Amino acid sequence: FILLDSQTNLYQPIIKMCNENNFSPNIIYSGERVPTILDMVSNNLGISVLMRKSIPSNYLENIEEVPLCHTQESKLVFLKKDEQNYTDKQKDFWQYLTDLFQNGIENKN
Image (cartoon, one colour):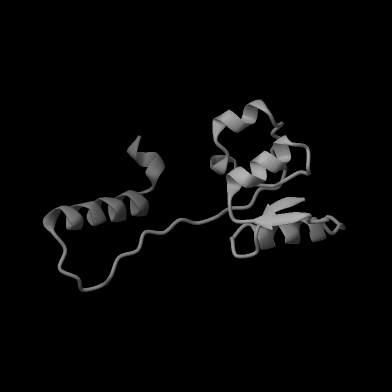
């Protein structure tokens, strides 16, 4: 396996999925850069598990993509400092995000 390193939020879930399926991955490399991992896979040095959105389309010409049956969810959050003097545009944007995610993104289309 060629994986993103243990500092990422992807490493432990992959190890857990492997263990839940009764095998321990033979990790030959772990690093921080997705392009490096994709280059190694393209050069037939191993296989990897990555988030689909992190793979630039030009890499898909040289590698095969196989979606996992069991997927993992991740959550994205927006953060801001409390009690800060924000501009009106910043406040409007924050209100837009708050409304969007409280009401559900799918309702905005």
